[in-house]
Length: 401
Image (cartoon, rainbow, N blue to C red; front, side, top):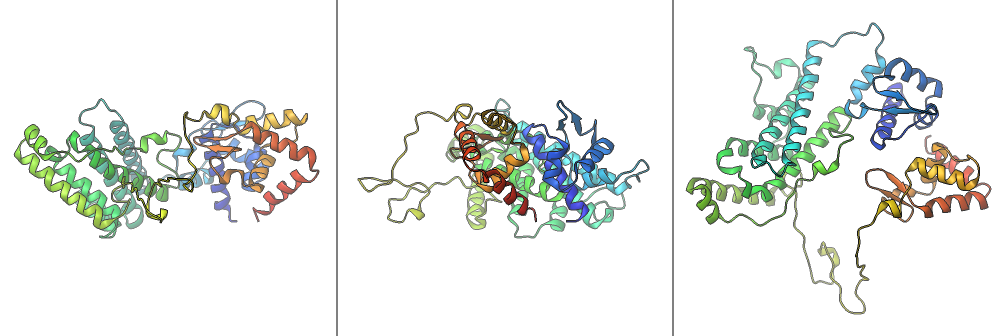
């Protein structure tokens, strides 16, 4: 593994701890990355301490802010000396474009997730197109240079020209953005609350597309550490009645809406990609081939067994322990501090505990959580099998090679 790859492993470790709001030690960072504890300590004290890494208690540390910087920025930060070279004008412009794009993207989501705002559909569209335009121009500046972004008079290229330079004509992502541009340009007629159920499918696709493209370019998620609920924009609902639109907004708007809905429906069917428009259709099929349906209805003695859900699962009761709490509980039950984060992860790896996000032992929603049954299972195996923990540690060690 080269030096850069090890630094990315270190960054990913810091990001993971930040997203879980968990403390870590130099040893834990070393175990996860292949560095020695001394190297981790040196990097933190010389490059990160007080800015991204902060001292906690009991010789542990907290990460804050590294989820929001890119892989390249982290590599640059770790490579800097006290006499580090300054960024050139293009690099500065690139960073400003990315930041402005991310600001527009975040604002678009915040606006859309504000139900009391009557014009949130229009505001989302305008800000999302702006986010795409700035991001694509940053890509072009990074890949092709300043001459491809700015004309001699200082003005920059349009978003339409940016799309031509970065995406293929038949790319569903490009078609999605072009539809957003059409909506923005015809905002007077098309960006009305009645169209939100249909437009939300387009909006959801563009948000996920942006998130994926940002991650590919920058190495981290644009919403790292924030609620994933902000990404859930789809609203189900019937197609608006053109007669009501006509009565409320007039003949011209009714005609524009009718034409757009037909065009959008035809395009969604032809493109057939969730990168253009998220599908919310569910098929119920009374058939002998359950693979043809999204939901299966069963009747009679030979039907599938049904589970009646009467109450939402309370994770604080079913899976009450975070990683650190589970470790403490295991050591308490064993009567000695035998398990640390490294050996805990080894157990999870060896026995594929985290392969299933929802099991009787493990649950993952916002953080990894573990049940009392899992704790009892670990304690029982360690107590009854002399080589059980050693076997897990050995498997974990071999997986890194």
